[in-house]
Length: 200
Image: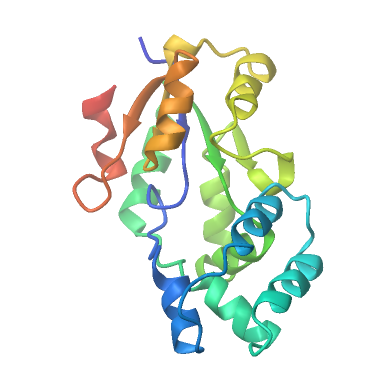
């Protein structure tokens, strides 16, 4: 029986355009994302690098781009947050049937942009739906690291078999499954988080 639900954020609540950053770099004259940027992005998502250090490091790989252009390309992945998803989540939270948590691989630039687009009032209303709201850059861990899932079991006293983890990334789903979590691998474009009831 499901008692707890852990949600991803990107492509579960907020829509993403995952190729958009690469497309922005192509427009800026780069044919591909330099390999060295991937470990940088992971370190930034874990909060190991702060934003100025991250931008300086990225700028060394993309010397013909200004930091403002890098920020615009970096944030190009972020799209809209449909109102129907927030309303569904608020109804779910108000029922108090499940303990709700958010777990997102995200970084300071992205969450600042999300807040600027949503508005602080809507963002705070979203956060208020969750008992725990975890952003990777704030906790020093990112999915699919097993430690990030174990943290829920210890800090919140959750039972893995009683906890549903909702994410659009298979690698993250498999990591949670190995620890005994129930999972819903949400298929972006084919399913919507508002169809959650059929997975409970």
